[in-house]
Image 1 (cartoon, rainbow, N blue to C red):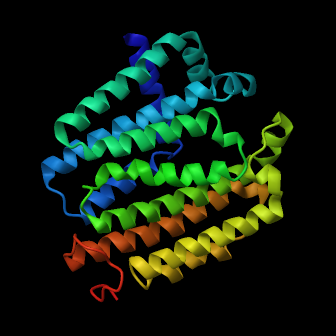
Image 2 (cartoon, rainbow, N blue to C red; image 1 turned 120 degrees about the vertical axis):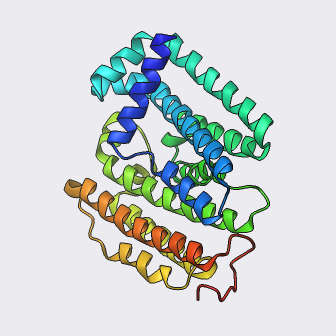
Length: 279
């Protein structure tokens, strides 16, 4: 038990330090936009946190041998390698706990669990090494993780989830660009390895354009120009981390504008297509 708790703690600390739990903040902001009650928000936030732990532990477990070879997060990785059985038990325990919460509180949470955890496992075990499928899987997974925040009858929530999924796809493209040379040397064929840097950058720009268009047409007409700023950001292999943070800043500001506008407008139900309340 203590080993499993230590593994979960290491996963949480490592991901938080790397600012890789952005979908948790995204889910909470969706709940705020939908004006969920305090109790609903608390349960769904706890569910989202546990689901994130399951997703990232699954990823670390599937990447364990590769991380050992590369020396990534050595202390955390070595402890996980020495306690594989505890790590596997922790995953099953989290899945069982999340299933119980969903069945007792809201069966709709099962959709987020099955899609989010299922796709995360599929991505980590197989798809992250399959060109094009890696990006699509991460986009869907990013949206599925945010479904924790959405009662299934809220159309607005689904639109927000799609937007977060588009953001996730863009970040996956940046990630495979950043790791392109390392992946190629390791024999891992991702989208960036398959297409090369120039064509992957073009795909990224098209993806960003799609994200801006979707936001403009379904959420707020003034958000598109903000998201379009990401198209102007220069990319350099040596400065991939800087580029990642700049894109995160642009996406974050656009997302914040969407959430603030929705909260101030007082609308939390219905489709926003054609709505004039924010236009």
